[in-house]
Image (cartoon, rainbow, N blue to C red; front, top):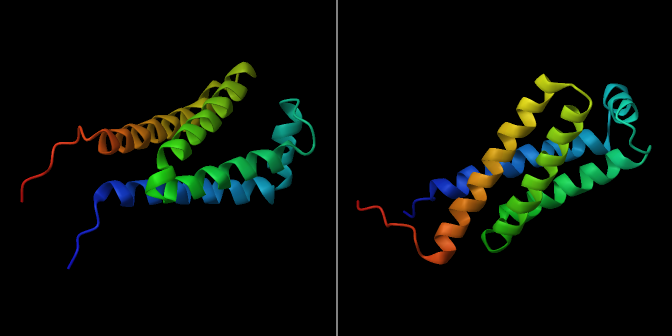
Length: 123
């Protein structure tokens, strides 16, 4: 039986997070819509955010597009953290920053595998 590498499970978990986030933005509650309005974004911006999150999730799922998906996910979370920080909602910046670091880690793991610098684990 073939073992599934932990880095795939990690990537899929990250993709699941962005899938949920994408749907929560596309089908935004009144609270989320009020947040976007308070931050000064146009009425349609939550759709764009949701679609970008779903796109990053789809890219992260597949190993050959994972690096691009991780970069997109990092940019999305960086923008989210910057938005709340610019509006002095500093405690709300913690979650996007944590997810941004996790997306960066996913990209770094993917890059290591592609570059051949990953050291094989002896069994």
